[in-house]
Image (cartoon, rainbow, N blue to C red; front, side, top):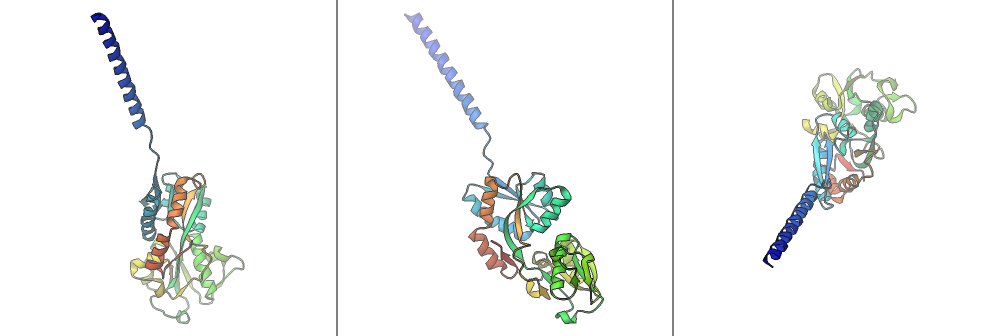
Length: 277
């Protein structure tokens, strides 16, 4: 009888040991299972966009997501990072500039959400009226196609130059058919345009308010500003064709187009950044 009891106890011990091992294996399997990725990586080169993303992050957290800002220092890297799938989205550019990147790099970037339209225009350190601008002066404009076209369209609208018929926002210096003041156009990278404001011989400088704040200027200091253009150049969140319909991008779109962001733009940047949603 004692022998039989010992056998039963041994079998019970083995069963408990096996059960414990099974539970341990199940727990290990469960803990090693990949967690759902709830981090939305967004690249930007703009202070204004980074601040908006900080506000949008509070909205995203309500959906269980976190927006992680990936800061870059130029207007190339944020598109490369997105195109190479190192980030989920970027927020630093308008549609025409993105399309320029796509064509040059076989990219598949798409606009996910328009957020704000920057009030751009021309500035002059020495002149306060258009009629005072002298002949043969230097005019600083962007060297990239999309922003150069925008700048020239403004000059055309103000009657300072005349562009070839039908070029619209796509004009280049080569499309100028009339230049009555004999301007010399100086093409400069957008990030360096603000520095041209203090250069001798520069009578007009085109720029965005985001870059001009570094030299203490706002749109109120402009000699003249662009007329509304139906958000054609709205600074937007961009994604890729392969992730545009993902849950992450849906949450990001909702977050950057929230009432909190709208209120921030109106209250803090009413004179320079206009909501586009």
